[in-house]
Image (cartoon, rainbow over all chains, first blue to last red; front, side, top):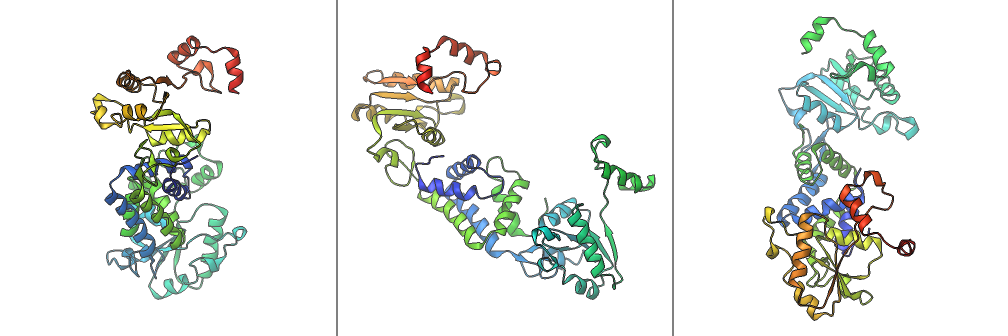
Length: 206
Length: 206
């Protein structure tokens, strides 16, 4: 692509560094910004800049936060005995958006993946033992990816905490609501038969 | 989507104002920016801000420009007798990227569309007569959309300039290279038969 303006070219270049954004999509965004009022563009760049410079990570759960401790951890209405262990802040947003979970979180910042050089020391695992012991946490809900790396991480954490009196659960796997049986993979289908539920549970989930 | 950080929420909100960007895509971009170094994010916001505040429109052809007259209009190597009339700066980028055109441009900033309230006074048409008369322009190449609005604009401009000795051409329409006949619409196919070319022209285009 040949631009007759360095200013446009630079902006397109910066946008195309974002994931899934090619040169053409980047140009469409830049031309849209060019149509917007200067004040609106200042709001755009201001929000991005404030976000990157102002963001903190919660000292308790490692979720993104606008202050030292995140709004979830300081909320007295949350169940402080339950902690959901997730890989990333994206998962916190996904679970929060269901509005069905009222406990706390613990963001690992990744999962164990020896092939990618990610060991326990790269993740927020070391503090988990103290957090569970000192805060009266009775249940840890593992909400990690159903992959070998995810399962490895679950087993690693369970082993680290085996001296503590805490119940460890994982989120339910099975056929998605609205999913059709014939398109489910064999492993998922097999597990969903093996872990079948009494009909009362099904009705109460509705 | 429920965010536990106002900073993240604001940035996602700003990104989702861009065309074709939903909340999920916006979040993916924001999380990518969060992973980048602060300095890299400053380069991103800086490029966007400099672009919006620094951009000018060329006083001769209305193309975007970093100075009062654009790099195409000041380039002594361009053919100053040929002017290609386009709807937007996006079209200038598309034609420049072919590296096959060496004349100048005239960016209308839209096409005539009475239904959308776009008349000649909203477009950069008024200056075209003077530009052609005073600059020794011998050919105007119309490169507008093959729609009713595009054709109307072509006819309007041709009528405005009928007292001048300038040749007006339009870019060729026909079956795209690599396009299959059976998928071409009837109008395009009919026109491409009516405007068939001697085989020598075809060979020389290769």
